[in-house]
Amino acid sequence: MTDRAMRLGLAALLLAAPAAAQNLKDLARRVDARLDAAPFNRQLWGVALVDDNGKLLYGRNADRLFIPASNTKLVVAVTAAALLPPDFTVRTSVYGSGPIVDSVLQGDLVLYGRGDPTFSRRCFATDTTLAGVCIADPLAPMRELVSALKARGVKDVAGDVVGDGSYFEPTLVHPGWEGYDLNWWYAAPVSGLGFNDNSIDIHYAAGPTPGAPAAVSFLPDFGNVWLENRTRTAPPGHQDTIDFFREPGTLHLWAEGNVAQGSRGGTEYFALPDPNLFAAQALRAALAEAGIGVTGTARSTTDSTRYAAARLTGPLAERTSRPLSDWIFPILNTSQNWFAEMLIKQLGRQFGRAGSWEQGLAVERRFLIDSVKADSTQFALSDGSGLSSSNLISPLTFTQLLRFIRRHPHWQTFAAGLPRSGNTGSLKNRFRDTPIEGRVQAKTGSIERVNTLSGYVELPNGRTLTVSIEANHHAQRGSAEIAQIDSVVVDMAKAVAGKALTQTR
Image (cartoon, rainbow, N blue to C red; front, side):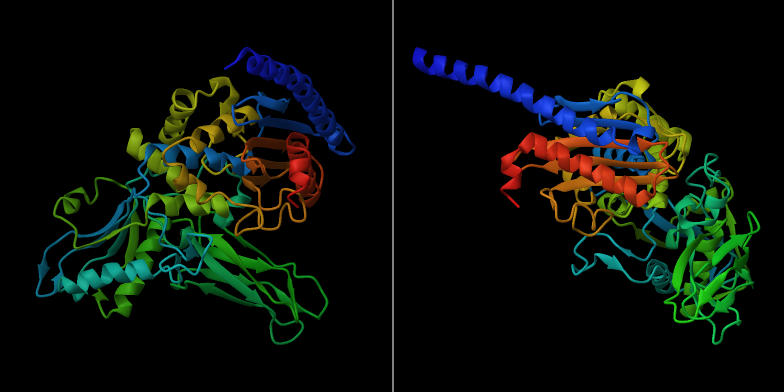
C-alpha cells in the first residue's frame, strides 16, 4: 500500500469514527425515548443489541437477571443442537415378560419409551406440503409397532399392556409449575413415554337449543376420562365462557360456562396425569384394531427394575424416532413446552447421570459456562420451557448464546425451527408493514406480566444484528406490550442501517 493510500484510509477511519459514535448516540436516544414513555416506563426493561463482532451497540440492564418466559427454550434448543448430532434418534421398544407359545404372549406386553416426543399429530417444517413432514394420526407409530408384533406371530397377550416410562426419572411434574397450569397441554407430565403430547383434545360446540348442555367430545377417546357437563348453550351473540377443571391427579373432569349458538366452538388440550398409562392405552387400542386380544388390563410403571429382565431378551417390536431437528422445530416454531421438557430430560440422560430436570439443567449450566462462555452469575434456570417464573437469564447471555449457535456447524439444526416474521410460527403476524418485515428470525416468550423476544435482525448490507428484549413486571395487555417490543426492534434496526433499510421497502 502506498503512503497516499494509507493516508486516505486513515482519513476515512477518522471521519467514520465520529459518524459511528453519533449513530450510537442516536440509537440510544431513540430507544430510550420509547422505553421511557408512559406507561412503559413503570416496568422493568432488559435490552441487549450486538453487532456481527459481538460489540454491544445498545444495552439497558443488559447484564441483569430477568424472567425470560419461553425464551428459555433457546437454551435447551441450542444446547441440544450443539451437543447432539443432527440425526440423533431414540428407540421405542415393545418387550414381552414371557415367551410366545402358540401365538400367545405368556406374560405382559411392555411398551418402553426412551424419550421420543414425536408420537403426536403435527408438522415438523414450515413447508407442510413436503412428503413425510406431517403426522396426521398419533396412533400411526403405535400401528407400526403392532404390525411388527403381528409379523412375529403374536395373536394374543395373556398378560397386561404396560407403559414403562422409567427411562426418565419418576418425577413427572415440575415442582415450580402452578396448580391450574397442570390441567393443560403446556404443563403436561414428562416421562420416558409420550403419546399425543400427553394430552387429550377436548372439542366443544353449542348444543341443539338454548339452555341445553354444550356438546363435548374427546380425541383420542379410550374411555378413561369421566366428564361432568355443567355447561349450557347460550343464545346467539353471547360470548363463549366455557372452561374445564379436574380433581387433581385424576381423570374426573367437569366443564362450566356457556357456548353460544352460532359459535364455531373450539378445542382445548387437557394434560393427562399418567402419560405412561395413556401410552399403554393407545397401544392397546392399536392392538384391538389389529385383532390382537389382550387378557389383562392397561397399566403403567416408572420402576426401572420391574421389567429389566424383559429388556435383556431383545424387543418384539421397535420403532426409531424422528431426528433431533424434528424435536427442536416445535420447541422454537410454535413454542411447544412439553417437547422442551422432554428434551431437557434427554440431555440429562445422554450427558448427565439421569433423565431428570436436575441433571438436564446441570448439562445446560456447564454448556453455557464452558462452551458459550456465559457469566455464571447472569443465569439461573429452573425448567426447559420457561413456564416456571423461577427461570432467570440476562439479555446479554441470550445474545452470547445466539451468536454461539450461529457460528456452530450444527446451526441449521437450530435455525430450521426458529420462527421468521411473516412465516409459519409464532412470528407469523409480527413486523408486518415495517422495514424489517421478513428480516426478523427470533423466539417469542410470554407468561403473566412477562413478554420477551430474542433473535436476529438481518440488514440489507448482509450484516446481522443479535437482539434480546425482556419486559418484566408490566401491567399492559399482551398485545400492547408486544407492539412496544416490536417498535423497539424496528427503531434499533433503522438506527443501525439508516437509509439502506428504508430503501429496501
